[in-house]
Length: 119
Image (cartoon, rainbow, N blue to C red):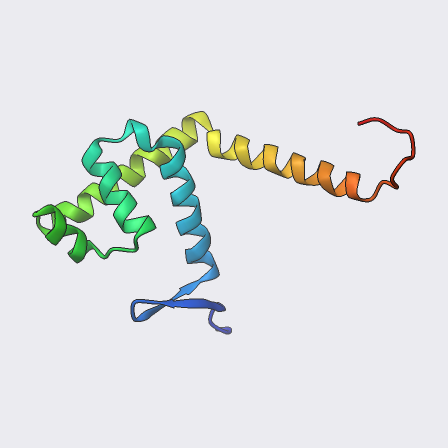
């Protein structure tokens, strides 16, 4: 079947793989971009779950709701930000712009100083 995915670091009794880390990073970007359009409760649930790494159980206890209700807040919030990204593509546009800037910086770093060319 193949080797298991490489482990990045342990997280509360489990390991975080590269795919999970990318997924978490992507979800955090979506939350940053589209968080203001979520309900206050959805935004806070996602923030605690993604940024603070709270479990659904910890989230439910803090919010005074059932685990199912906490899970639903997370699920609905994620679905909403993913729908917005699918429609608007702000995170994709930002990633493309960052790639262009990195390319320009790389190209400028290779240019000799004082060659008279203007950028």
